[in-house]
Length: 301
Image 1 (cartoon, rainbow, N blue to C red):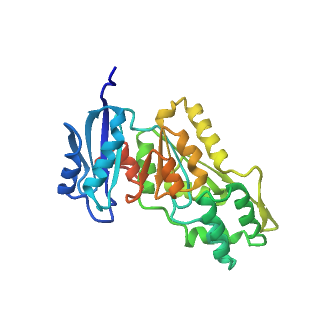
Image 2: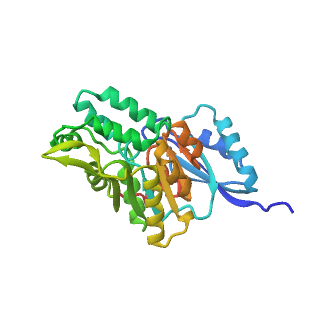
Image 3: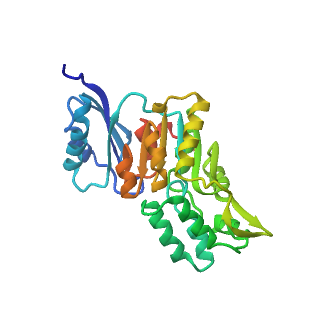
């Protein structure tokens, strides 16, 4: 028996700060899908087209569209049309919701930025396990005055473009949002407040006499902790797996990305992009709203 066609959506997304999505380019892309019904979500930034094909044909259509638009700096996503608006978003912090790696920023203040950043890079690419890599990096920070954390937050930590709009819009439409970081609660508390998250979880730095002790409270909150937190929040809210979204960029985000109804690699490392349902390589964080079918007129925050 031949499988029946299912409703799908093709979404094209440009970076709002970059070259616009041209009408001609959208037309070329949309011509690759059968009997589509296109609409603009945000003129010059995002557009989508709904259509029906068999599920087995979806990947081929996405590949065909990518080939048709060539080098245009656009994100191309084909996904099921049903259940696109999610009720729970869990997000990584470093290099996802903010543009920095906080442990690297602290290390820079101690003159060991390059050494720590090298360890961070290997961990995020999945070349070394996250937990021992975090312990190694934190040990190198032993003796740092705790006050430097507040200085780094004030001087260096900045939200990624679209972060506040993403969180504000999802919350305005009834979703719950959680910041899940392999970093430190000293940072996630501030970032969660800046972006408007409902919840945040991370590692707790051990402080002794006003200085970093070089350790974190065990167990380390990393890959397995993020996965457990996603499941815990989902169950507490009484949600189905399909109603959840996870976004991150590093290897310790893979488990939660694979567990979510929609897993998004945001400017992610290759190992993360390979595991995710969706790759956002050009757009800012508002891309996660366009994926859910939100138009610019519906944005909040």
